[in-house]
Amino acid sequence: MKFHLARPALVLASSLALASCGGGGKETYPVKVTVSNVLYEGLILTTNGQEVAVPVPAKAGDPVVVTFPNGLDYGTYYNVVPKGGTAAGGGSQPAHQNCATTSFPREYGTAGQTASLESARTPAIEVFYSCVLKAYPLSGNVTGLTAGNLTLINGSNSQVTIAGSTTTSPLPFSLGSVPFGTSFGVTVLTQPDGFTCTVANGTGEMKEDQEKAGGVTNVAVTCSPNS
Amino acid sequence: MKSSTLYAGAVLACALGLSACGGGSGDLPLTVSIAGGVTKEGLTLRNEGNGEEVAVPAGASSVVFKKYLSTDDEFNLVTKTVPSNVESCTITNGKARANYYTVYTTVPAVFCKIKTHPLSVTVNGLNATGLVLVNGADRQPVTPPATAGAQVSVPMAPIPEDGPYGVAVLSSPTDQTCTINGGSGTMTATGPSTAPVVTCGPKQP
Image (cartoon, rainbow over all chains, first blue to last red; front, side, top):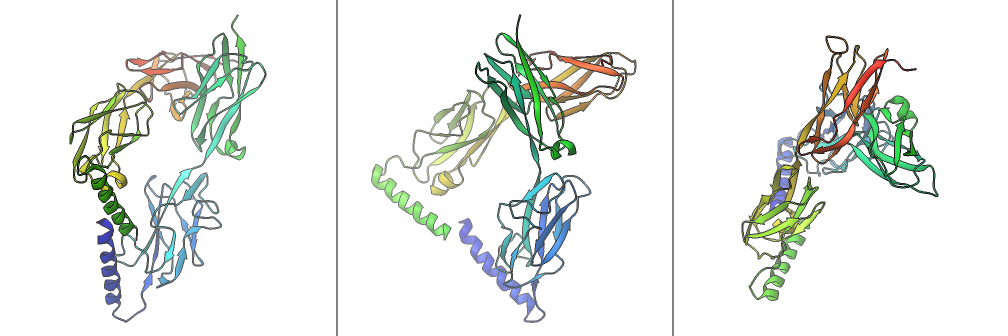
């Protein structure tokens, strides 16, 4: 039902767009991009040889709407991607973030032939990008655990259980990745039977230094048998 | 193209349904997607349309009602009971007349919101700024008490019932060392399983 309605609506919209031109001046199609969750500077989007820098919104969390300087002629192919990157991200991104698009309307299409939310009224090309904070590993090693099960947590965010081993030491573990700028604190939720384990280097914040180092990978858990 | 394929599929499905069941019960399975929040037994869904109930196992991603529906049978899903740690569940696409589209495309879904309970940390001996407590990503700077060393209670972000918490000291005041006891535990229906206490004293080398 929905599909059946969409097609006549599009046909109608196209004919209206043509009618409004009246065969006069050349109609161009502005390329409008809505980017959500931009927290840092650095995102540059490109299409058809044009670039536009995406600013950080005045109020954190507000979407940012940017329009490329020049509209496109009818039938021109466009492909809005981060400069040097792809729709999945990469290239010129905001610091500590990755912006990507996967949903419809897609980042590519042909001017005047792509359905958009506004196309019934104006011939704008609309593209949507969404940014997330990059997350980095939180991992380390357990030593001295020869039996039992140890459960480590990073607060209420992630949890891992490590089984003791008589043959392997140290035992590697990793907790859920931690987004940039976020704190973490590794603690013992459940001590293994017969052992007491303590955590070192387990508390901190994922900041520039940790980001540069590719995460925090030196959490050291030491277990010793109960006397 | 897509719509015509769907339509053809629906017609075919109807035709098969009629021939298979001789006009009796239908061939549309009523599936419910479990979008989240079901961590333990206790969720029972009921189809008011035919009175059938189904129990949702913990951690299931979807459940299917045993009785198949015929085209145009009305279904109306409600939650009969919810797990003990759930505040409420919301159902989307839960009421419609059964057809290929309402059963296979706009699949009914249920999402449950887990109850949360407050977690607070008692701090003793604090006499300066600089103490920051973290429960994973939840970061709480602690304002020192008006009277140096007096006891303060620090509220952390609420914890989901049956979920773990692990409070750690991220940083201590410049001239103090703060340690925590009972920082890790599990949130129960009646509150945290431990009583986290931070003790601040003179700086340890």
